[in-house]
Length: 396
Picture 1 (cartoon, one colour):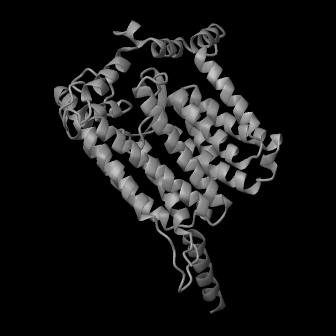
Picture 2 (cartoon, rainbow, N blue to C red; picture 1 turned 45 degrees about the horizontal axis):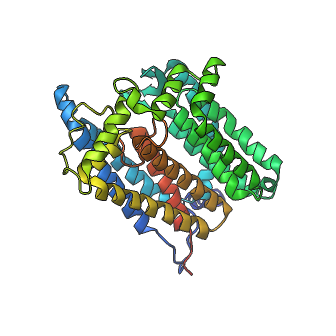
Picture 3 (cartoon, rainbow, N blue to C red; picture 1 turned 120 degrees about the vertical axis):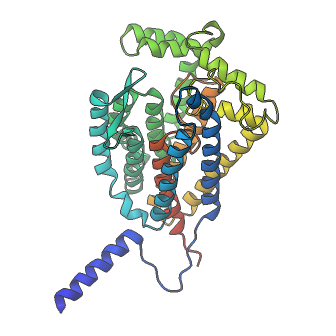
């Protein structure tokens, strides 16, 4: 009898650890506005993925619904996973930061040696059933969880230079493994460490100096990149991206082709766009129109009005994350939301900046909108954690 009671007590405690403690009479917050914004962005993404990919899949004698069906199934599974995670206690999820960090390092090493070769790079792992998986997305999630725990537990230490250096040391292995195959994702991984440590520390002058250094690098990007190539640090294709960014019109049939076609798409859209499904550039002129360059198709078909509307929805998502981070029950929740918000903000900025040729061409997807099963799945998981933090906010 005593053993049965002990087992029941153990089961109850496990449920409470995973889903939290709910007392009768307590009122809890749930951010339905954020859920609606996520659903809206995902729905727009599905429509634009089908619009931008159906023509070329037909030309290649493939199913015109392939990309829509694939993205839709993964997005739907991710949505239910997001709702499930939002009902869990985020403190329970934070304990997986260190194990996921180690797993992501192993998977990144495996992908770099035995992964699927795409455009000369090995970034994906082939899973059973023909499903491909990009371990970079797992690495981002692992860093967000790990940094959230570290920043919350060592808030005093992060007010010293030593604490900031430790953040950098934690980030360095993942940054190296990601950046050597995908520089743009490496920048996001580095940005997570910079933003989360910036919020936690009082030593702001370091970040001001780093910003000044980055500005100098941007101004002299071509000269610095050429010197790094000669030193064997950068590859020649990475130098070509810098040169194309500076003057894409000088490489109209080579590296500047995609950039110029994207700018043509944006310019031809005007204020209200050509109309949904009426893009000209998606008919073979704009490579990867359903992936990294999908924002150009949005501008062409929906015009400036549609592009600005989508940007405003992204700003609303970031605003809601800021509110949740400010009202979170503890520092763990605050840093968790800040990490997710930082990743989404950086990806939106980088993607739009690449399409508009504000920065060199990098392979960064537009969150919730670009085609990519791994990306949408892990974004849904991360938003589930944000909603979990919001759900732990008491209203009384």
